[in-house]
Length: 606
Image (cartoon, rainbow, N blue to C red; front, side, top):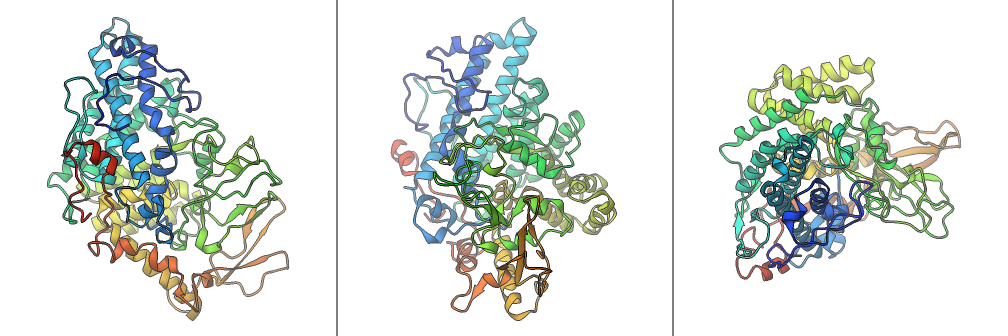
C-alpha cells in the first residue's frame, strides 16, 4: 500500500503472527475517536504498527539480507540478476521488488503510527482521571513514536531523502509529498522520542516485556539515531557529508545512553552464547542484554531459515528440524580478527552444519562459507517438522544493552577523548568476552593500549563493535555513519588476498594460519576443530577429518577465488565514485508513478 494513495477509510488491524503479544483480532471500525478512547482498543490500534515486521520486507530482507556486504558479512551479488543480488552488488534497479516491499512496509508502519499518535494525543483517555489509563496511553504513544522513528531511520539509510509523512491520512491532507532532507527527518524523530520516553514503562512492567517496545529500547534508539544524525551520509552528488552540528548529536547519544545506564543499569549476562540461544528457546528475559526483539510466532519469522547455522532437511531427512540455510557468510578475515581467547568468536562464527541424517559435519564450502552461529533451527526444543523451512518463530533482537554501553564509549570519546568514563564502558563489554583470569591482559591492558589517543580509541570501538555484533546485521549502518565503508571493504579484500597468498608462499602476516584444518564430532556430539589457528602436520589419530582451509582461497585458474575479487568491487573502485560506497538505492518505480510527479530518481547517478 503506497503512502500516497488516498485512503477513504483506514482499517486498523493487529498482527496475528506475533508471539503471544499481538492478539489475532482486528478492529472493524474506522472511527479512530472510538478506537483510542479506551486502553484495550488503543492497544490494538498500536498493534497495527507492528504488522510490517511480519512481512517478508522485514523478516528476511530488512532485518538481515539487505544489510550485506560489510567487512564482517558477505554475499556474492554478481552471480545473479535477482532482486536480492542487485542489492548485494549495489546495482539495484528501481524495478527491484525487494526495495518496493521495504518502501511500502515502511510507509504502512508510518501511516499506522501517525493514526495512533493522532488518535491518542487527540483523545480523552490520555487525560483520564484514572492513573493506570493515563500511564498505559502514554506508553502506547511512546511505542508509536519509537516505531515510526525506526522506520524513518531505515528509509533514510536506504533511500536518502524521503517523503516525511507526519499526519494520519484524511480528507484534505496533502498526499503527494516531495523528499525531505534526511537530517530534518532524523532530528524530528529524535525530538519526538525525547518528548515521550519519560512517560513510558520499563520492560519489566509490561505484559510482554522485551517483545514490545519499552522505555529501554526508546532510550537506546534515541542514542542510535542521534549517532546516525551526527554521522556521515551520502549526498546526491556522491560525496560524503557531515553536518556542522554533529557534536550536538553525539552529546544526545552520550546523555541518553547515560540516562539508561543510570536509571536502569544491568549486568551483562556472563554467558554470551545464552543471549542468542534464548531466541531459539523462546526465552525473553527482562533487565538483561536484549532490550527489544521482534516477536515472531511459530509460522512466522525467517531466523533459522535464511540466517544462522545451516540445517539440511526435507521429507526424507532423518530428523524433524526442517531446512534452514545461511544466505550471508562470514569472511575468514573477520574470524581471524578475533583474539583467540575471545569467547564471542566461536559463538558468532560456525564451521559446522547439520546434514540430512541429523549429523554434525563441516559446513558446505568450508572457509568460504562460515556461518553466523548465533541462531539455528537446530537449537529449537520442539522440532517443527521435516518439511518445514520458513516460519521458525525465533525472535530477532533489535537492540542490546551491550550496544548502549559501546555507544556511550563512542560518544564520550568523540566529545572528550578516551576518558576514564569511555574506557570503563569499553571494559564492561570486553569483560564478558574473556575469562576473569584474563582480564588483566585482555581487558585492562588492552584498553590502556588503545587509549593513547582519540583516534586509536575510535578504531578500537570500530573493532569491538565488529566482535560484539557479528551476524546481527547492524554493521552496514555503522560503516555508513562512520564514513569508512569503502575503506573497510578495501581492507577486507586486501587481507583476504594476503591470506590466500600466505597459504601458497608460506610468508606474510597470515603465514601462521593452517593450510588444512582437522575436525571431528566428539563423544558428546560437539563439532571440534583441532587446529583453527595454527598448522598441524599430522593429526594425533585417524578420527580426524581433513579439510582444505586457507588453501581453498585460491586456485591455479583464478589465483584468488572470484568472490574475493568481485563481492566488494562496487564498494571500492568499480562503483560510480571510486572510494565512495553508493549504498543509497533508487525509489521504487511504483512509488514514483503514484507520486503524480513529486518524486523522481534524480541524483546518486541513477
